[in-house]
Amino acid sequence: MLIDTPVLVSPKEVCQMLGIRRRTLFRWIARGRWPEPIRLNARVIRWDRRKVEQALVGREVAGR
Image 1 (cartoon, rainbow, N blue to C red):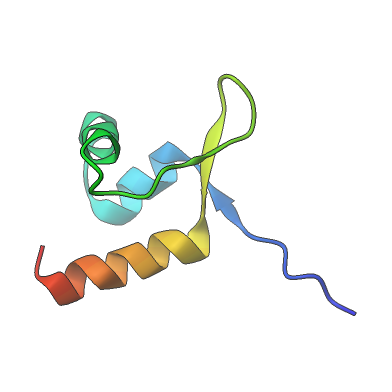
Image 2: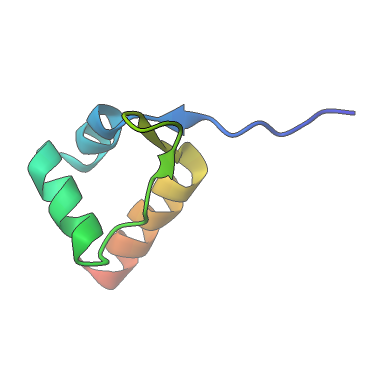
């Protein structure tokens, strides 16, 4: 049996995928325009790559 382990991406990787700066990413999170990250500990956050890709598709469809 295979377990589908999520691939986690860092804020830097998310910013590269979106073509934005880190500050913009966190502004979008604060405004509810981007999914909340997974907090691994007090200093480390990540996103599930599949959810990032879904959000990207959603943004493209919405024309943002």
